[in-house]
Image (cartoon, rainbow, N blue to C red):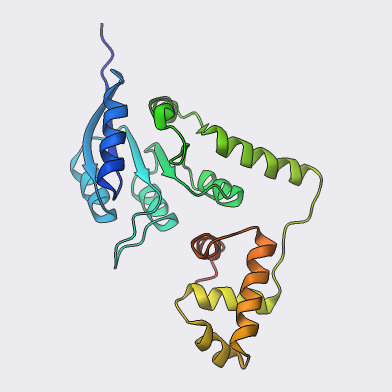
Length: 217
């Protein structure tokens, strides 16, 4: 008796990546691409009208008026708490890897390396087993090793916290400086100091950290 293939919904805003994911998954007889989405709104629509065993989604699908990233994952978890989620991402920050796993993501696949491992990741997620690309496993192992050595977690000063929170809310450095009675150079330095303490290298990673901490209120 043949085992019925798993229905997989795939989502990515880049057509080339979407086509590649489709081709890789179709190479596995255990998987069936049931639907595709190119935006956050399409993800919600396809989940609403298509039977789905596993969702494979890009982490970042920025569209004006739509919240992607952690907001997307959180909303899917709220609507479909039992749905296995596989996330495709280029963001290898170990802190964000931990946050995504804490959000209930079962598999993380690195878009910067070969995605031939994707079918394995999907099947693992379907079985409720965690799967991480080797690059992510290494990053997480390094973070856990550091934690085991009792290295205190980085702490931002109250002013650094307020600066990055206001920037994440959309204020410009000049606007933050005016509200806090400071200079733009000081604000820029405080932002850079905050990123250095947190081990972050991009504005996107910093803003995701701020959002994950619940500082946006």
